[in-house]
Amino acid sequence: MLTKPAIAMLAFLSLLFFSAPTVWRPLTPTPLPFESFNTVSTQRPERLRGLNKVLHNMTKMGYESDYYLRIWLFQASQVPKDELDRVLQQASRGYNKTLIITVLNKAYTEKNGMLDLFLRSFRLGKGTKPLLDHLLLAAVDQTAYERCKLLGLHCYKLVTDGVDFSGEEFYMTGNFVTMMWRRTQFLGEVLQRGYSFIFTDTDVMWLRNPFLKLNQSSEIDIQFSCDGFNGRPEDESNPLNTGFFFVRSNNKSIALFDKWYDARNNSGGMKEQDVLLQMIKNGTLRERGIRTRYLDTRYFGGFCHDYRDFGRVTTMHANCCRTVRAKLMDLSLVLEDWKTYRNGSVVLHNPHKTCLIDSWDELKGH
Ligand SMILES: *[C@@H]1O[C@H](CO)[C@@H](O)[C@H](O)[C@H]1NC(C)=O
Ligand SMILES: *[C@@H]1O[C@H](CO)[C@@H](O)[C@H](O)[C@H]1NC(C)=O
Ligand SMILES: *[C@@H]1O[C@H](CO)[C@@H](O)[C@H](O)[C@H]1NC(C)=O
Ligand SMILES: *[C@@H]1O[C@H](CO)[C@@H](O)[C@H](O)[C@H]1NC(C)=O
Ligand SMILES: *[C@@H]1O[C@H](CO)[C@@H](O)[C@H](O)[C@H]1NC(C)=O
Ligand SMILES: *[C@@H]1O[C@H](CO)[C@@H](O)[C@H](O)[C@H]1NC(C)=O
Ligand SMILES: *[C@@H]1O[C@H](CO)[C@@H](O)[C@H](O)[C@H]1NC(C)=O
Image 1: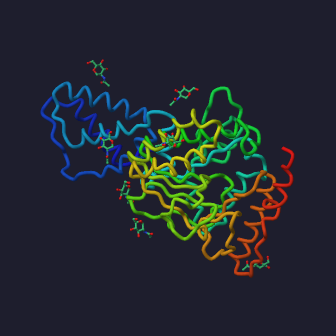
Image 2: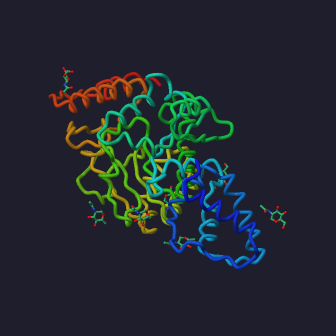
Image 3: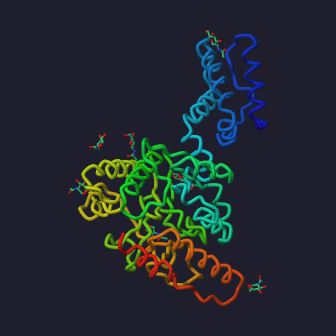
């Protein structure tokens, strides 16, 4: 649907196009806000491209360029260049070029699987349901992509030639490492296109709105969740976890992601998280003036160190857990406990036994 100002503008432009070639003057002195054109430009790119051509011809014919002409040209330049541009625009609409990204494969999309649990947390969480509009699922295989579309979410197909990511990838197998690097490359591209994001693993339960707990200062470039927290948000020795982090898009963060991704060849099969840790330790971030913060595990928690404090918890990550099966078991219990808490009853927190004990035993001999 075209908005009213857009219809008015179309009428206005056709009038101009067919009227006498006098110098064009704005008919109305009231400037229109750029935002009123956003819906048109993202929903009707083909129309705008046509209009852009008309405007181009008009300029060539000597019509005086003016405020509205420039608005239209600006908006025409906002027409998505490609599929990634389109999904980024959609997922961040009304959210200041900020969105939430998770990477999804087939194994996670099975019925009653990780994706279902992840989405359920948004629905059960406090103020998290509207955030689903800003969630982009990057699917690494066709099955995951189709499932995402079926759920009516924002989806992007993240292709990598010749690699099958569809199975459950255990920690540190070759494909797992390749997938993580592809993810780093993709997130770097998102930054390059001017979008800031929270990256979240799908095994993170969103119980409160994390944006409210992140430092809003534009001076902070990256905020990492941690497996443990020593009380000092600026201390680089906090054990960061790349399962949940926020990155602000700017020149520094773009350059960092480039450098991080470029380091993969000399990483000797290291995980992307370990390469990043090395870059932090050897001062790569400091010398580039990148300001990082480490998030308090009381708010951005995980199984490694669970405070069992539903009064504060914002996200809960199934870290320190080796199998998807165990994560599913223990995260389901977290959501059950959360429901009890929300309904005002006393919570006896489950101890994440399947993850912390069974999942490690299960993998012995692997
Ligand atoms: C623009 O002008 C060219 C020739 O000058 C013409 O072929 C084309 O159809 C015009 N485009 C529009 C959209 O009016
Ligand atoms: C939107 O983001 C820009 C750039 O990061 C920032 O300068 C601006 O203050 C933000 N606006 C709002 C309303 O958050
Ligand atoms: C956010 O970071 C800035 C810059 O380091 C700091 O001055 C401010 O106190 C922080 N805000 C919060 C809420 O922690
Ligand atoms: C970021 O980089 C671009 C292009 O290299 C440059 O034009 C711009 O001034 C830089 N911005 C900042 C804030 O350094
Ligand atoms: C890393 O290796 C790939 C192929 O293995 C090559 O295409 C790429 O240019 C290399 N990158 C760097 C930064 O060396
Ligand atoms: C720091 O570590 C990264 C990742 O291994 C490497 O690419 C980079 O060259 C190192 N920098 C210095 C100054 O040692
Ligand atoms: C809270 O949960 C209990 C047990 O599941 C149930 O009996 C009770 O009706 C619930 N209370 C509310 C207000 O939903």
